Length: 359
Image (cartoon, rainbow, N blue to C red; front, side):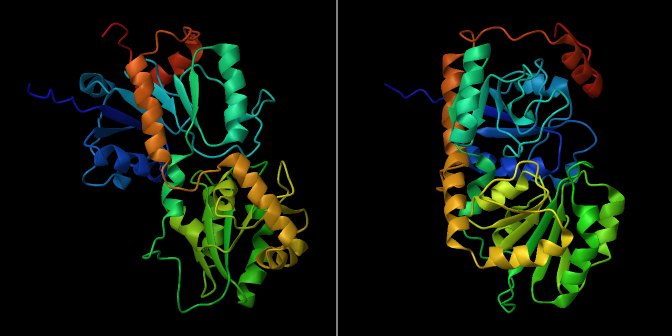
């Protein structure tokens, strides 16, 4: 009997920020490796199509998405319209950094009635989402690890930020854009002083929403000891750093996953796995301590990573696909109907300029 060839599955990448490209490309590679299809859909004006590669097809309209009929939609953001077809899969745009939203709740665990499946990164996020799954019943949860980190665990021999002829330790400074949380304006003068000393090599990278005036300010610091980097792929930077200086940006958690130390400035939720300081004068001594990798600090980092993202095999993308395919095969009729949430979905329609209701 002739074998029936299974149709290719189609997966839509629904993104609204430039950093989402690098986050989803490991998943794209896993999809391509098994012969299935990927298309990208770019929402809003904060994501730039110039970062798409020649072999990455883009769908330009909601009508085009509907005509393509994706089996699943992967979203590294918080929302996706329900009129986009396919199983909706939340894959997160970062780790839980403890940020609180205007409702006084941890934003990482805010349910916005958009997703059918959440692919969590480790026990610290899986357990709260399982409780939310019981409470709402409108989605299911699978602990998969985070696809964005898959390349982090693979050696990059062509990393442009690693300089074999420069033996100095590398300090990676990253900062969030939120005015209430960013330390960039406060520590500027101290970083200027430290970068001129020359005992360390500095790499500086900010959240893409960082205030342009702050970005321009830091660009003035560039010298033989400090490089300001604008990129849509932070993985090579994370691999190049020996220690990170940060505030309450979730990127610090990605850095920690390498079992490398982080110094934070007025972190919103400081714990034993961080060296948290409140005075700019303490930055140098804190970085010096971090670079010595004291045993107690490293033990706390290892324990924390085992809760946040225990897998370091670079296979999270495959687990996400397995969980997604299982839901596609099972269907979503067994889930409770999601609340209409008319205001949120009206806003999404307005943002996309899409007012067809019955097509």
